[in-house]
Image (cartoon, rainbow, N blue to C red):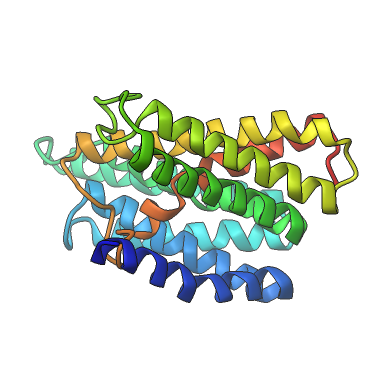
Length: 267
């Protein structure tokens, strides 16, 4: 086992108890955990586009608006959530307007508003679903993503020969993808059989759906980093990179489960 591989396991073992505690306590503890994860992930997201101290006020404002959105979800206030999303768009847009109006057309970039808003949509808007799911549902999503990652990694190391999408992620293989899908489906079937109310067969398509969502979420962040010439989103988690590198798959699996949940009752 390589040092980097050992670091991944150590980091997971250290972080997991805090995650489980927040889920079990719920309420304000879960809100605090979601705000911390979202803010750290948002800051990494913004820093990929604005390295170092560049646009630092935008980074801070984006994270504060993200925290406000999560609080709005916590108190069940859609207007607060909407205000935070539109606030992000208009903070960036007015910054663009003022720069352009001051004759700084060379530095005025509307993309700043797009990046600021995207950070709010990509992380806190998605993560707020955790506040609405039961602990078992959130646990199912997290374990499904972990199973996809772990199964994909070990199956790819052992059997991987055929690249699945080399322009996006050169190391990932079809064999690894299938291994991750099988383990993810098995985890969903096990959790569903023990805790769920849906028949056993309903957990199979859910497992496939969560696995595909998880893989696409991972591919998206990989492509984003490649366009920006970045290896990792950050260095916060030894062996994993940044927060985004750890939760990229979860950020698509959460809304995917929300969609499946709206169509069919699993718990």
